[in-house]
Amino acid sequence: MKKSKKLITLLFVLTVIIAAFTGCKASSEKETAKEAKPTGAESTSAGTARALKEIKESGKIKIGVFSDKKPFGYVDESGKYQGYDVYFGNRIAKDLGVEVEYVAVEAASRVEYLVTAKVDIILANFTVTKERAEQVDFALPYMKVALGVVSPEDALITEAEQLNGKTLIVSKGTTAETYFTENYPDVKLLKFDQYSEAYNALLDGRGEALSTDNTEVLAWAIENKGYLVGVESLGSLDTIAPAVQKGNTELLNWINEEIVSLADEKFFHENYEETLAPTYGDAADPDSLVVEGGVIE
View (cartoon, rainbow, N blue to C red):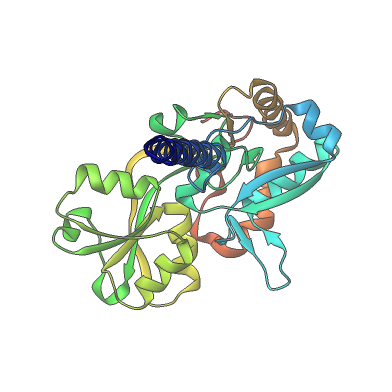
C-alpha cells in the first residue's frame, strides 16, 4: 500500500515537472516567434534600395514628393501630381524609359523613406545639409534657397529677433526647425507634420509667423492676401537636390549625368516657366532660384 502511494506520488511529481517543462518550452517558442515576426517599429528598419537595372526591369520608378507644397509638389483638383519637383520627376521617368509612381511624403519622413527603400528617389524640395548627407546620398543641386518668414501684413515680422518670446510655426524635419532651434532658443516653435497644417495654423492665428524655404513662403504669400514675407533671406544659402539611399551609387551617378545633360536645353528654366512663373510672376527672378547643370553661379 505504501509502495502504491509512493508510486502515485512519484507519478504526480513527474507529471507536474513535464507540464512545467512543456509550458516553458511553448512560452519560449511563442516569444521566439514573436521576436521573429516584424513589428511596426521593425518594419522601418533599413531596406535594400533597387539598383538602376532593377528599376528599368520593373518598368516603374518610385519618387517621393510633397502632396501639399504648392507650387513645388502638390495634388491638383483632378488628383494629379503637379509642381516643380514633379516636372523633373516626369523627365527622369521619361529618360529612364519607365513609368513613374509618386509617393506622398512629409518633411520629417523624407530620410526614412529612402532608408527603408519605400522610394527610389526623393524629390521633395529636399535641402542639402551635413546631417542629412550622413544618412542619404545627394545628387547635384537643381535649385538654391534660403529661409524666409511670412506673417500677417498688419503685424509684419521683419527680423528674426522680433520672434523672441513669440510663437513661430514650422514643419517638422525642416531646415527652419533646425535653424531656429539652434539660433533662437527663445522662439517658441509650433510644429506640424504637414505643410497644409502649418499654414492653416498661421491662418488661424496660432502663431505670429511661419518659416520655411523663402521660395515657398513667397509663393504662399502671393496667393494669400493679407500676408507678406517680411524676412526674405535668413541663414545661409542652401541648395535643393535629389537624394537616393546611401550607397546607391549607380542610380546617383545616373541622376547626376541627367542633371548635367539637361543644362544644354535649359531644362530647369523651362521647368520654372511652366510651374513657378504662374505663381511668382515678377516677384522673383528665375536666375536667383534655378540651378542648371548642378553648377551654382
